Image (cartoon, rainbow, N blue to C red; front, top):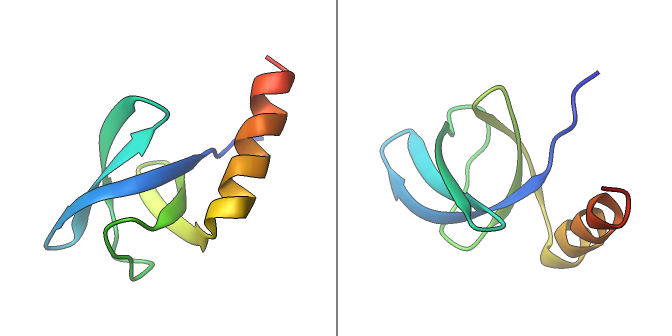
Length: 68
């Protein structure tokens, strides 16, 4: 089972995005989902697999932080 956590898109370059996972930045592939700067996304194995709205991202992070 994999746990995906929300990340915020910081910048884009071709089919890649720099995303921020609560302070940790990582480059991910955006070929599966069209995104723009400021979007919140779910990432799995280095690929954006879904966009989520800000409220949903905050709720997920709150649950994760509560259980760690």
